[in-house]
Image 1 (cartoon, rainbow, N blue to C red):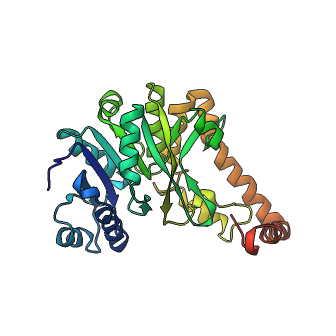
Image 2 (image 1 turned 120 degrees about the vertical axis):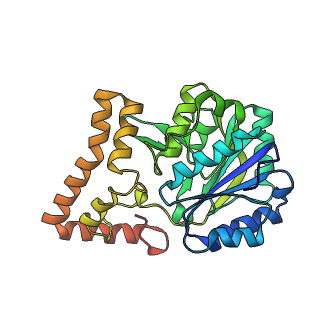
Image 3 (image 1 turned 90 degrees about the vertical axis):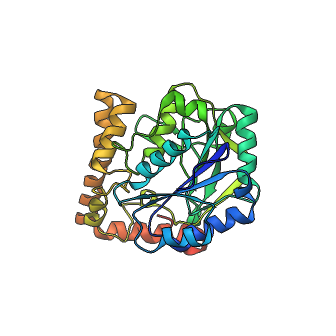
Length: 303
């Protein structure tokens, strides 16, 4: 294990994406990031040789090794613990499938120092999905508009590429991975920071590439080619935003016991309604899917 030696520590959670992880580290090396930051890779039990490949090609990178039960939230928390045990003044979250623009991480660090805020680089994925700042609504969270972000109305953020000053981590503590092992772990942490009074900002003029396709949360259940049974099975995985235990904790924590119970139940009630419609009127849903295909760019569905 390489101890953090810089004031900036970049925590990269990884699992069984060796080539993606190595490409991420090569990009950081080409951008000169290793000269001013400690890069800490948290490998949650990869079985594809990820840790061995990192050790061979990037001996300067710090490594933590999990047993496959940490998930994203646990890997992030353990990386932050390691960073906080040293002299880190700022901690970055960086997913290995996120590619900041050249000089983007240095610009993010300087912005956080100058503005005394928590900030991120917006990430765009194939298919038009983009990650950045979010706001709470009556029934969940939604992506902020650019006007809302400019006005400082952001309440939380996605965790693709974020920078935190040490004092805010000391103030609110670490992510609660025992409640939010993966999906919503970043949203919950952002809401906790916002509630504590932190300023949340998107770095202006910078966009990262998110190499992963749009998540299942972005698909239309009505027109999806997957069966409703398959969609329901997703809810048993911590990767899903509607993972039963995770979503329950998230809804009750941020909307209260009474309304939070309704927020918790709403998506499953919606699933039941759509499953019923697809069962009794399959022709209608197929026609709707064809209509969406015609109206979407290049004739492709955008579920």
